[in-house]
Structures are given as structure tokens and as C-alpha cells.
Image (tube, rainbow, N blue to C red; front, top):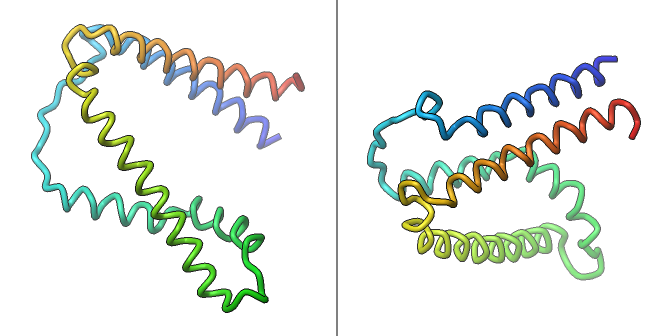
Length: 142
């Protein structure tokens, strides 16, 4: 019963978020704030420590990593460190490519009245509605 209530609350929350995203284009819904300049290293440290203590990543490694470790290939700690280093290097390259690519697109995406703003807003709210509908369908067994 509690799980069903949690799913219902989650779907209502997703619908509420979809509504907020949908109407974010109106002047009343937009929040204007001044950005405070932050040093790049401070942003790096925040991101690093958030990822370092990410419980989902820890659980992922605890569940998925053991299947790739072989006892006859040396120490398990060395293998774990090696696999973790390879995964972090690949992830760093992929994230770096995303950052560089999006940095080049930023002027286009951030321009006032850009079609991308409206399209992304409507796409995001549509995705939230679909997720909420899916949660409700799981409740009734579809």
C-alpha cells in the first residue's frame, strides 16, 4: 500500500513539474537572478566530491564490478583500481567532448527568443507527462 501511494505521489509530482516547465515561458513564471562569478577550480571540486560520494555509483560498482574481476589474473584490488581508472578515463573523455560541443552551441541555444528554448521546454514537459502516465499505468497493471 505504501509503495502504491509513493508511486501516486511520484506521478503527481512529475505532472506538477511538467506544468511548471510548460508555463516557464510566461513572464510570471520566469525567475531572474544574477549569477555570481565562481572560479573554475571551485566548480571542479564541487563536481568531484559530489561524484566521489555518489551512493548510486558506489552501489553500481559493488553490483557490477565483481563480474569483471578474475582471481587468476592477479590481485583483486589492483584489478579494481585498473577497471575503475579505465572507466573514469573513458567517462572523462565523453563528458569533456559533451562540454566542448555544448560550449560551442551555447550562443545559439541561449539567444533570446530562440526556438530551442521553446522546443526544449515543450519536449521536457512532454517527457515528464509520459513518465507520470507510465507510473500511473504501472499502478493499474498495464
